[in-house]
Length: 246
Image 1 (spheres, rainbow, N blue to C red):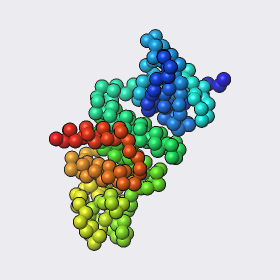
Image 2: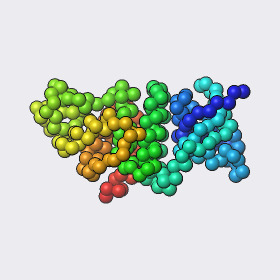
Image 3: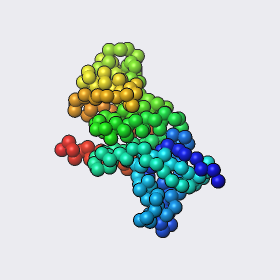
Image 4: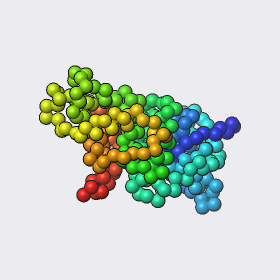
């Protein structure tokens, strides 16, 4: 049996028999794969620590395409210590892994993994987890084939944009805003920038709470309206955001 090395992050796990686990690993090489970690629940197992959720590592596995692969060993790339000691950050990473898993079930491209890891590392480095999450959510909409129109008015194509509308599908000009909520000018400018930014190259994110709230609200409503994805991890995040803002 050939052992191959993959770069990945453990998205979730479930118990298998008495002492083992099946890991759902998001990998750069093969997308989302299922991997059996034999005996990983035993206290003295070498696989115990590397089978935890959100382990970012090189995994040596016996790979079986479209079947259950087997974990042999793993080498940690980044322990993500800052994330794992913060319940808010853990909740965001849980959602990002959950969302990425759903995206990979519909389409697979290497940069899906690259964008996920870049987002995780920025959150680890202390960047605002909600804003980083919103950036990744925006990028994933193109993979899902339902990205919003952020180039001109979604109705007429004009450039005199005054707001965002999830109902209409993107930017809206003055003539077609009707009863739409009017977002701030900075929100219009920043959301367009976030759509195209390289997450790995972000060195500063100076965004007001109002702009963050308006962008997050638009993206939440857009996902609810167009993606058909209803994730428990997202509902938990919304509950947490409500508590933080109350």
